[in-house]
Image 1 (cartoon, rainbow, N blue to C red):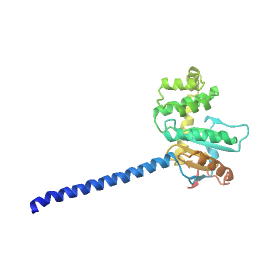
Image 2 (cartoon, rainbow, N blue to C red):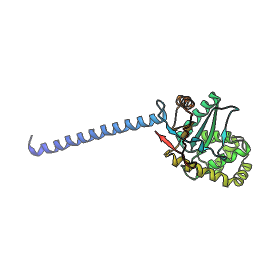
Image 3 (cartoon, rainbow, N blue to C red):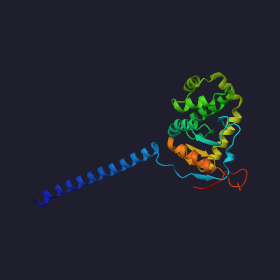
Image 4 (tube, helix red, strand yellow):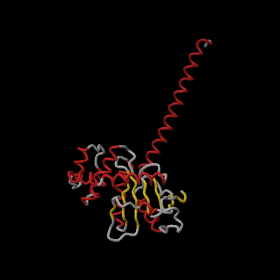
Length: 243
């Protein structure tokens, strides 16, 4: 083989090596992305929570809540109706709370997905004046996420919420509702949550979706450690003690 004929063969060999290396790199990256996606959809063990010194400051007179006659734990749920992980969490959380029977839920609508999420959150909060928030919240979390008024009216009907009255209540309480949404946004940023969903159980903050078993573990953990330190800092602050 002459030098002239060897050069093209050498170039082709190097090109094959480059393509093989690129294919292997793509395979590794694809595998990592698959593992990441799986870890988010199928969470492993309970993550370490962030401990809060003043979770009671999350109380809000307008934020909808649901509680049994007797409860010994409050969970604040930070979520957005268009957040895929929030929608997955919703099913497991509702079942865990129903099975437990001693948990109060407070719904903190943290709007991070834009105007349609804000419209859905406003209407869901307004539904409490009909006594229909729990039903409306459930339908919004399980239904479609188009969230234009046609879709929202249909979902209100499925939840047993009167659409025309809902619009009247939204208009009547718009100032209070928007102030509540602003408080939730401020609280989430002070807590440095970073995204939805997030759960505050007692004095424990869990960020990200928890699976069904993790929720049960988190509830048990929160009940064991609900004592809030005496020094809670300034009344206007929401404090973290570590993560």
